[in-house]
Image (tube, rainbow, N blue to C red; front, side, top):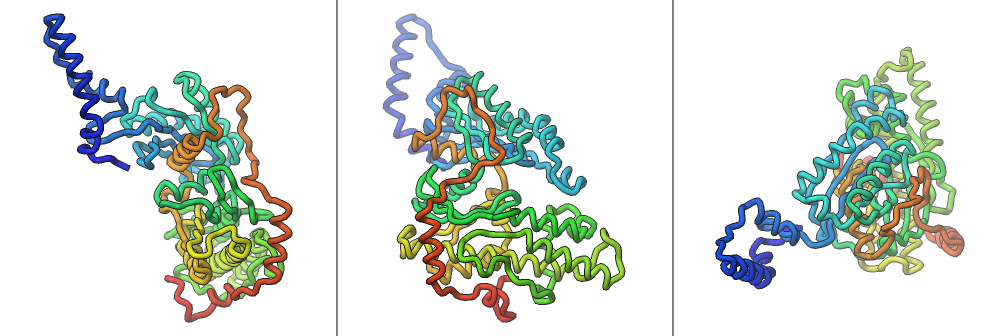
Length: 450
């Protein structure tokens, strides 16, 4: 957030005048008239975190993200003002190889991390000495990728003598909404991406109660695999898109009713997810259609758009149904407000508009508010890491002056799953009637937005 220059001036006017008067008296006493150069004035004001027209508050964090295939950095202050950011995407490289190859991702991170951090700092106009702390993703993610970010950050911390804030990647996704919206704790968060899928009650900056998670693969991973099996990279409209984006794009042209696919885990009375079974069902459909059309694996099916629409629809229904269960549980146990409960949806898959529409149906039916960060903040970025650092700095949580023994953690759960929560969740969901979301989403007269 930018503070108007007139506010800066009036807030700081007495102190600045006092200092200038003292300097003038000292110079006149020495019979030397001192006229500071613009460069020296800028440096003088910079020492007070003061820039022309902008007041930089004291908490300023550099965030560094390298958990998967994006090298990102950003500088954010405690008002939520993004002072500078930079990102290097590896998407184009990994599209050519058919997926992320960890050693390739590692090498690209090594080649770009210094440039990206420099670009973020330069864009911010902030000197490294003005930083309050450096925050970096250390868990979970690809081991080789996490190692690059952590190694670079620890060297920077050692050189600058700044505090280090280790960041949990999913915690950062969950708290990003508080950068752009005034969201108070507690709230429910659904994190859906290429590597993760979970539902949690957020009770504080680092206080998460896990309600459900994927038992196998993540939805983004499943959509990517279906896109590869359909060879959508060869489709003229999808050649530059990631798998998930290609599915979403092609689904707009398809008929989701052409294939009748049941959502997974319909009898499971919990909030967990599963996507591997759905992937296998789609694989069988693709194999059958290839036989019917007489084409070989790797060629584009004439029914590719219908398959994309069906898998997206089934995925949306499954995610929305489990989320509906979590909302019912939280409201019945008074874990969420009855009148102004909030569901936050974040992660790369949250940018899928069809899935968002399914979740809107759920939140409308349960009198909840649905909030999603803008698409550029749903995918991996340095802003969310820096903001998580600000949140932890404010709360005094996990701020390290001693970095000895810090390690990255490729696998790391978010929050706690308490026994009483599991038992009460099962009881609540067994005794609660809910609308059939698959039927609502499946009605031909339902306006889904496409």
